[in-house]
Image (cartoon, rainbow, N blue to C red; front, side, top):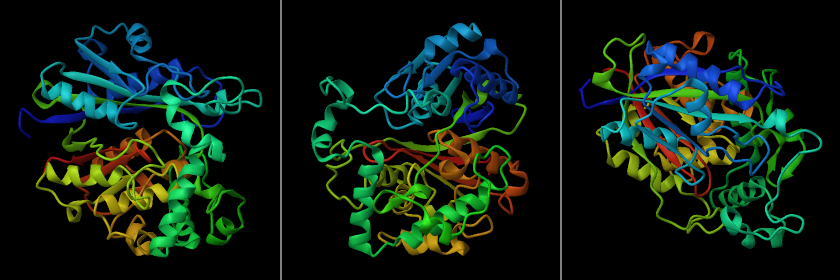
Amino acid sequence: MSTRDVVISGIGQSDVGRRLGRSPLTLTVDAALEAIADAGLSVSDIDGVATWPGNTEATPGFSGVGVWDIKDALGLSLNWFCGGIEGPAQIGSIIQAYAAVKAGLADHVLCFRTLWESTAQTAGRRASVPGAGSDRITGDAMHMQYLLPFGAVSATNWAGLIARRHFHTYGTTREQLGALSVNTRANAALNPKAVLRDPLTVSDYMAARMISDPLCLFDCDIPIDGSTAVIVSRADAAPDLRTAPLRIAATSSAMRDRPQWDQHGDLTSMTASEVGADLWRKTDLTPADVDVAAIYDGFTILTLLWLEALGLCGRGESGPFVADAANIALDGKLPLNTGGGQLSAGRLHGYGHLYEACVQLRGAGGERQVPGTPEVAVVATGGGPLAGALLLTRDR
């Protein structure tokens, strides 16, 4: 690797599960210390922190831990930090850390994402709908003024609209979405940390209750508690790492169309299409080089749109592509969401995908390890107007 390269030097993850009853800060500290130790670094080596969305409680359990919290908890001395609600999807913190390390603002940046939705969303605090009650729609929720009058109060509603348009335009079917859910569950069965590990069939999927037509229960990810941490380092600042570093070969957080779920110029796609095109522009690698795909699955339809956006299948061909296990199974042409994704392993908001991609490139997947020696992984997170992607490579 070049001394100018930016690498992922360490990864860590707290306990993951439903209703763990632990504070978000303790989960974050567990993940952070594991990542630092995994890199063979010490706490004193960390001179940068990045997170998304920062310490916000817009929805119960959505975060609750910010830069200041982890700085204080670990006693960090920082040269650079970044954490805020607006940014390029969940792994925006990795992209920001990558830029900071490239610019020489920090040598080792601790990036983290923490959720404790399962514990926070009790019977008394189930959800938060922007504009509900007597509150006016303001600030971050301004886009809801176009959605709430029509009862579209949830991302499930918005994703359902995109799915229905994709069905209409390309002939995509619920059975194809079901095949994706089944494959994801089969991978989760091999992941000890996954929250849903019982077998799932397409018949089970088709019989599940509808949430927002055409999306049913098994099209939606699972709220859980957990924290994931990643150390982004300058390659030449980490010569004695405990494990081989993974190079960040390219990143993208492009946004060119309108920044709303329902206002994209082509409702069979989303901002992912802009990110996908931009990502490949920045590297000599091509979609054919990808050995493992870790693709956002907050809803099944988002995975399909990402596959098309990244050129991993043809436009409008993602339905038949995921319906064929020879394409997406662990031993398939493009192993997809090998740890169970958010649909079965639980919603770690993109960071679970990044963690799993690192595990696979290290050859540390155990029973779920992709055969051979995968060298290139693509990680993509976000839905609607939020989109970010990374290309990771082993030292080739």
